[in-house]
Length: 383
Image (cartoon, rainbow, N blue to C red; front, side):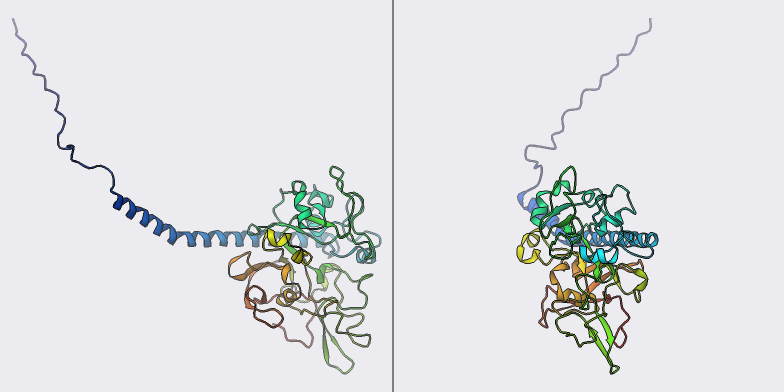
């Protein structure tokens, strides 16, 4: 009989005693503080770079948006006999387009604000001004109705704009200015009867060149509303830039410096003339301030007929209406501009002044230089 050998069972290994009660686990307070300090140091090093990259991303996206606006304007002009949508008072619109055939109007006959007209190049859902914005007399009034503002179309909003809600200015309800501008009660789902100085407010970070899109007619027959050199009888050139400084005997008094009524083909050097600019207040607090709110308009022009100021360049226009242009929306005083030939560029402030005094918050010149005046600078220095 075969005897099986008994198999020895290996005893369980005894627990190791090498990790005794005196072995420490985790970090000491000093080590923890060192780790925290290193992490804080890395964050401090990386945050400026991350912030710079984020700001640069917003700047690039903003440039893409304003280029898109310009491309829509080119398509609009292609369908409208070379004209961009007009931005003018009701009296001047009636004088330029009495038959309502040259520009686009809403269902109730109200002239469409230029963003609404250009939005039709993207979506036919924009038939009326209230499809985009709300009627209001100022920013605070518009804020209360902000839930009725369309937020789906981001083309007219710069991602770096902290306010975004802004006004096209025209159409504007001013009964004393040769026409009311605002028609009827507006949105049938949210009717609002016209009030004095009421306009439309919506998501808007850009403004249009009023020298190009504006009109002279019932409101300003006698004064130059664009910077324009005019040759005098003695052969010399006079820079016309507003009304106060000129009398009836001046070469600037009548028939000079008129706005183009939206006609793109009349622009001299369209590659140098800006058509759309970044505009709007810097902050909500500034937008709500009545001292500044009256000066906000998403329009840029080269002459002021009441002040007799400004000049052919964007920096000159900013001296006349300093609060229309944001100066801190992007780092280093940068802004985006779309030109009348359809291309877009980022420009940078190179000098700061206001009324001859140095002001760090108010640029007076940019590089590259951008013209606002669409006219041939005969007899004047130009780049």
